[in-house]
Amino acid sequence: MGKSYDNAIIEAEVSLAIERLLIGPSTATWDPSTGKINISSPPAGFVDLGAVVEDSPTLTVTREKYQLKLGLPKALQYEAIIGVDGEMTCTIYGKSNDVAKYATGTSIVSIGTLGTRIAYGKTTLSKFALLGVADFTDGTQVVHYFKEVSLKPEYTENIRPDEVGKLNVGFDAYSHISTIHGSERIVGERIYFK
Amino acid sequence: MYWILKDIATHLHSIGVGKLNSNLFIGDLPNSPIDAIGIYSSPGTLEQVVTKPAFQILIRKKSGSGFASAARLADYIFHVLDDKWDVLQTNKGRITASSTSGTNYRDDAGNWVFSLNFQAITVVTTLSMVTTHL
Image 1 (cartoon, one colour):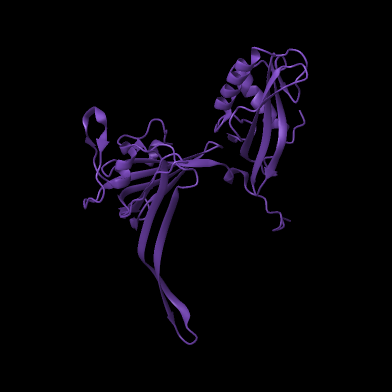
Image 2 (cartoon, chains in turn purple, blue; image 1 turned 135 degrees about the vertical axis):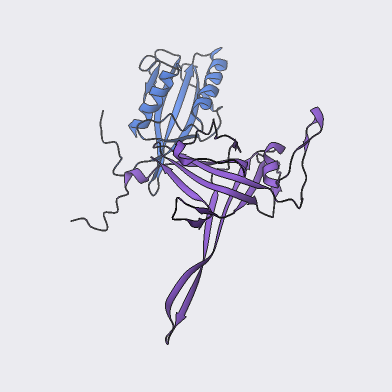
């Protein structure tokens, strides 16, 4: 008879990975039935944001729950989800405007062979499609898929003398009705490839 | 522990850095040949689920003009092992260098010896632990 203190981890559940971000215009779509994503050959419309600061990718989904408590003493009688939020934040190794344009949500303006310029603080809200891809050492892959995201309102950037250039990117997820998941409103999907 | 030394030796052999048991040795650096590489175990650490075994590579080249070639080989081995995810085969994991290449000394015969230290991050549970003694 198994004992609870035989706290063996299921081997298939244990592996190592780093998550990378692929980003595209909100019109870009990805079909999970096409299989695992190859980072070096992203799905059409998506580009690789490059190396990430290893511990930085963070995905948070929050469901706002309404709770009705009645009686004496008050006891839980009814619950319902009345709000749902999704967000993805990450820090990217990089200093060029090719990455910063996604972090700030603006378009690049060329200054010829000299370089490029982008704007801070524009009122235009840019929407993107976002894929977080994590290849595990056992060959499995987890994909976090947000069909439509917008940039978080704040943008921070720190250039320090003793660190590689880093850019922070953060996204809020829009919701959509998913026919795959019972025609319910969802903000994103987690896809696991064996 | 031995599995990681063997994986590293096999990888270095496969990319042509050395020839296993001819000038590339596990846990040994015999007097001959002088130009040789030795792979040794180092103290690693054990954390919840994650295991961090460590290893050291010694690169020896003949005294005198051997310094430059030893330094270049140390740089190359650093390059092919640091931050690599696909080298370890027995237990998949990531190798990171503990420091940049550069540490060196001269052995009793005056030969140049460069040392490189690495740590790997792997998942070795009691279920996946390699029990073979080969």
